[in-house]
Image (tube, rainbow, N blue to C red):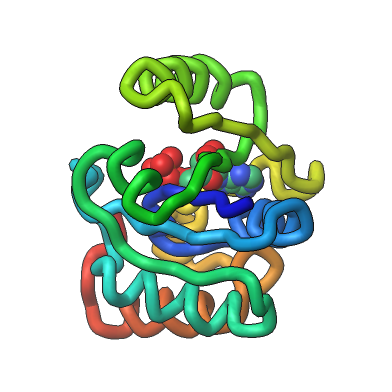
Length: 163
Ligand code: ADP
């Protein structure tokens, strides 16, 4: 069975990677899908986010990655996938994820959403907090894969404001 793990991945963190590993051991194929249409004013372009994901998932032979626009259920159908994987960190994720999952079911009843919990040590990680730590000069090595540390530092060195 093929699943899609959608998100902003701005940038990918160890928490995302933990979920990808879990999904890769459960499903024959995992497609990490980077949303192109979000209103979140991302720090990294979709191409940059995909390049980071490419480096990080290279050892996982059943994981691929691509950008997508528009409705998630349409993308899932276009990839002949049946399942959407989302990560659940804390109760605070629940309400939003519940609403999205039920709406996606309404839009396409054949698409099932499943939730995977990361290791507890990653449950407090988010791309937003990583960018904040980076902006304030904190060490990032324990929270994001090595290529992401470099990419964040490069954005900082470039004098670009981290959102
Ligand atoms: P979105 O903008 O869709 O929330 P994110 O990149 O922030 O995209 O997250 C993508 C998915 O990964 C979401 O299901 C989110 O809950 C999950 N996720 C994010 N960070 C973590 C983490 N540290 N541990 C587990 N799941 C996570």
